[in-house]
Length: 83
Image (cartoon, rainbow, N blue to C red):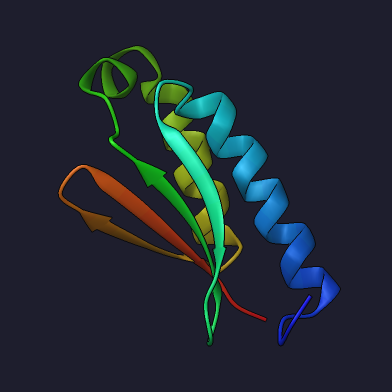
């Protein structure tokens, strides 16, 4: 488990599961970094943005309500889960 506590791991896995249903065309994985755990969504597809816009809005709202930082980088998203 490393430096991160169980709550951070559980939240990261929950965000991963939510992202997998929202961005099902993208590659999604969890990466444990030194200061936080990152849920990375690679190659966000334009079609997902169109077809899944309601789900994306709900997912983004959940992340913001949980106090998570979402970084947008080209066609990737990184969600920082800190504890």
